[in-house]
Image (cartoon, rainbow, N blue to C red; front, side):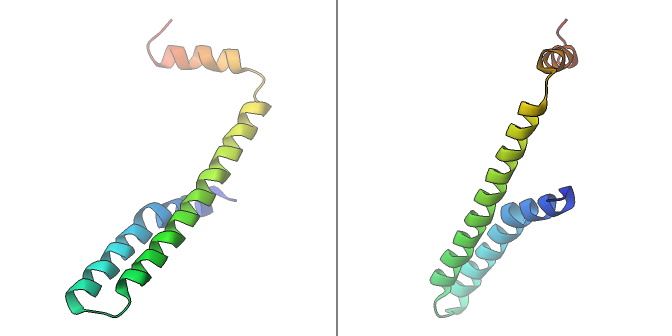
Length: 86
């Protein structure tokens, strides 16, 4: 998955779906739309599924990167220097 696709899906799952869900629930309550609670719960479930799949994909990616990195000690030293250590 490209970075652009990942970033879009992450934004979609973390920002767009919860905002849309709140919109549906709010308008449904105000205007008395039928099944607004069921629709809101479905939207929330889809958002959670997308977020879980993205999180799983991200964790797998970072595990692969860690296994491929043979210079962990050098990386740790570089990070220590960036954080103000010696």
